Image: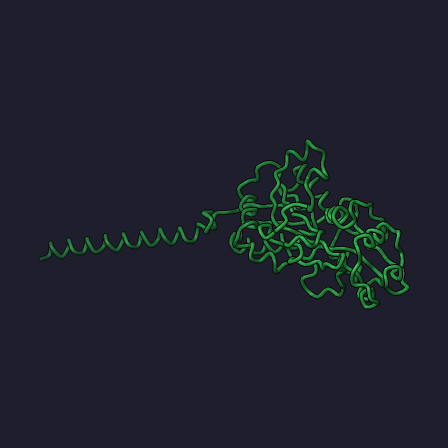
Length: 301
């Protein structure tokens, strides 16, 4: 009897040990491997990014969400304009260069060829004005009127049906990708008249300058207009700057947003790029004012 009892004890003990081992193994896999097959617990490192102010709100939000999954990854995101972001990633001083335009528009051919393009979303640029402009009756401009305003040919709002008030341009520097996009698709390539005294490539600062300056007009990405901002948007040829009108191709001032790397990114940077372009994160893009590329009915323009 004693010998038989010993065998039973050993069998039960071994069975329990096997079950514990199995459960422990499952527990380790669940905590260390994400849904995309990556190692959540062990993913560490740092990522630096700079460039487009139009893309920055999306990247900032994606960083917060990404860090919930990978708390040991440190990500720093600066603005500075698309041109600056492309310059820095080309020089190797940042891992990611955020840009509203293709690298070939800001860098020479040899440097642009070294970069890898990651299209992350669609961004829509909207003309914005101080509320006194819309209150005086200007809510829509023809494209030609918009061109004439930003090139300095029209200088008073009364010339387009508004009050007798000077037009104040709130402009961006030439390094700005937002400016390049607006010039190409809103101004048909015409050179913008710069107001050096109020020139900024910080979209948040530009918005506040338009809000606080009577008769002011500028332009920002829709991502800066998700919440009440104290400014109004202007339609172009009767079409409002909305995601729906962008998707359908009715509204013309949009572009793809790019996140460039110099060559193939390292593991941590690739993981972040994969995340920001994933279906999981894509569900949040529209709430932040960005368009999902797959919804575009017109792919190029």
